Amino acid sequence: MEKAYKLLAKQEKISNKKAKDLIDRGLVYFLDRKVKIARAEMPEDTYFRVETIDKVNIIYQDEHVLAINKPALLDSYELAEAIEEEETELIHRLDRDTSGVILLARSADFLEDAIKAFKQRKVKKRYIAWIEGVFFEEMTIDAPIATHKQGGKAFSEINEKRGKPAITIVRPLEIQGKKSKVEIEILTGRTHQIRVHLSSIGHPIVGDERYGSVTRSKRILLHAKAISLLGYAFEAKEPKDIRQYK
Image 1 (cartoon, one colour):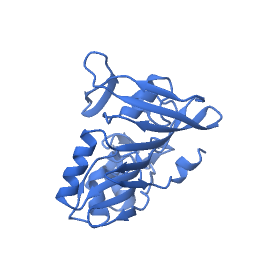
Image 2 (cartoon, rainbow, N blue to C red):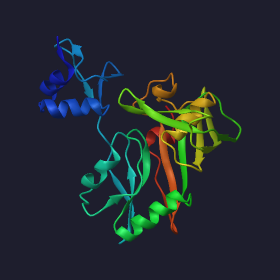
Image 3 (cartoon, rainbow, N blue to C red):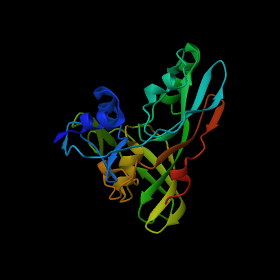
Image 4 (cartoon, one colour):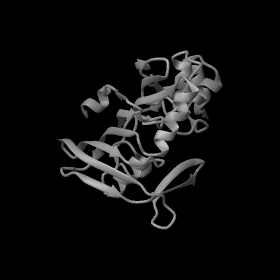
């Protein structure tokens, strides 16, 4: 028996640090199951499958802003390095599993104005997701959300006493078997807001085991489709796993 990251390092001929990072990112699989613990003891003849991250695509750029279609499984803070853009600042973030449009500021003035727009709720954001169950009627979810740390990671929940206001509008798009494709508009920006709200109505996002999904997936099937602010409007092409649920 040997630790998973050491076995992976030997298999891929990479450093132990790089192997551990791949596992922590959720890119390593064994028998179609994600390897979640880098230090897990596994048989020495274990063979891993390593997923690759899609290419980072630039949607639009000018002297003020850079709009990017972020692939899933890439951290937001790694975007500048991925496109070799050092003189930029993240305006907002997406979860690692979430793909879609994300904005970076190229000037201090634009960054300041964008932050104000977010605080004043003058930013419109639209998402696409595949969810568990059959969803066929538009719904507005108005439920306060509180966030705390659980196992070293952020975990959010609906909490009437301690939660902050959170509003999510969900619209049906398509139904395939016992899964539904929906469009989501958020009027607030709480941590894991979409994931918590959809879970609260019995329709967690496919692959979101943390919030109740019973379906295994390479990632949480959530895509940031569009965003508009300060006179700009950007839209990110849907990746294959969002365009059509297998």
